[in-house]
Structures are given as C-alpha cells and as structure tokens.
Image (cartoon, rainbow, N blue to C red):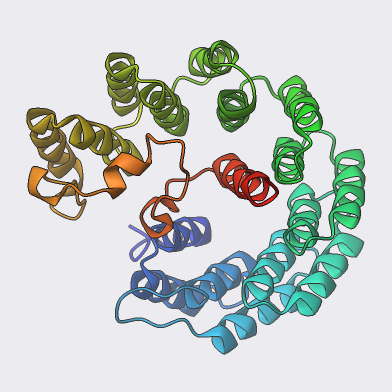
Length: 336
C-alpha cells in the first residue's frame, strides 16, 4: 500500500521501520528506513528510525555507529525540538560508553524540551548506572516535577532504589506511579516482583492480581506471576497463569519459554510438546522451545534461590525490576 499511494504515508513507513527495529532485524529495518528516506528525506522521525536501524546488528548485518550518528545529527538539525531524537541519540552514545557525549545530548534536548519525561529518565538512569545515585535522584526529582504524569520516571526511580537497597522508598515510588496511572500493567508487575522478593507472597499475589484485573492483556505480568508461583512450588497455579497469559497475548514469546522451562523441570514432556505445537502455529519453527533431550541445569536455576542463572538465556525476558532485584541480591550476597 505505501508503495502505491500518493498520500503522506511517512507515519506508516516509520511504524514499519520501528517494527523491524524492535524485532532486531537490522537488515530489514535499514531497507525500510532507506526506502522511506527516498520519499521523505527531510522527515526527522524517519531519520531517527534510520539511525536506530544502523545502531543495531543482526546475523550478517553489523552495527554501523558512524552512519547511525549521521542520521541522528540530520534529525536534530532538521527538527531541534524533536525530543525523542535527542533521547535516542543520547541512549545510543551511552551504549557506546561515551557518557560525556550522552550527557551533553540529554542536556541539549532538555533545554529545548524541558517537559519530555523520557529525556529526564534516560539521563537519570545513566547517572544511576554509573553509580552517581545522588545526582540521579536529583534528576528523577526534577523529572517528576516537570512531568508529573510520566509513570516510567517513577518506575525507573523505584528500580534504582531497589539497587540501592532502599525498599521502602521503592514502594513509595511505585505507589505514586499507580496514583498517576492505576491501569499501568508494568508498574503492577514491578510491584508484584518487589513484594515477592522483599515482602510476602500474599502481598505479591495481591499486586499481581490487581494488575491482571486492571490490565488483563499485559503478558509480562502473567509470566512473572507464574514464575513466582513456580518458585513457591505452586506448579498447578503457575500452569494456569501461563495459560491465561498465552490467551491474553499468544505472540509474547517469553511466555512459551518460561512455561517450557517449568514443564521441563517437572519432566512434563507432553506439555512441552503441546507448547511446541502452539508456538509453531504462531512463530513457525523460529521459536526454540526446549525438548526433553535438551534439558540441562539451566532449566532448574529459575526455581532456585541461587539467582546465578544463565544471563545470556534469560536477559531478554527480564523486566527492569527483575534486573534491579537480581543486582540488589548480588550486592547483598557480596556484603555478607
């Protein structure tokens, strides 16, 4: 359709390119972005999509940082008030470990768009990850003062406080986030995880249950709730929750992986086969579900108190709160 119509379809091209980017298909993302730029060479949003396409790599398609920077620069020159362009460029430089450049980009973006919550969040998270927590708190405070309805600011701040071991403060921030948007599934998910680790199972169930009632299509909530029940040995309940999550969003791949890991640990090979068939109906053969002969120690780690599971396998499934809790546990362990 976008190849035939004469109407302005730049937003469709942008959405298509970003879809390929989120699927981490660098080659397709670049093809779409470059085709779009032939039609809309002065569209800042498409320039950002092109920059992001060159900022990632996939098999047979390496990252090209210099090209990514060229497109980011063109985007902000064309539209200096494009806050997302400044934010995305800054995050890119932070990932390249050029923290000075990232900070400069965040500052410039906020001078032009002081009410852009994602810019405040990105800068605060950068300082937090570099261990400068006092400055990060100041930035979070300034961010929520400028953007009081930006839920992600509260959630990111709560994750930082978990890493710092201030669980009461993290609870306060999640409560504030829910006062801002009570229907925000990721916050309920984060709150449930927090209570499962640092509170009580009953409190975690309340948070997960409220989230499932209010945001019934947020699949990560069902995954994390199910895994919480599995860790507690409530496998039947976990199985029910995995099933509910798959009904809510059958295209959320981590649900298949997490459910398969539990069934593999239990030796339930019939359930594994059913999951494989269901996954193939949605994803073809591209989604790897562990078979009985492939079970190894990694499938047991998720259900043990020892959190030293294979990060390369699980990192794509983790929410930010899960990462924060894992890092907090490592800190606690190293201090004992």
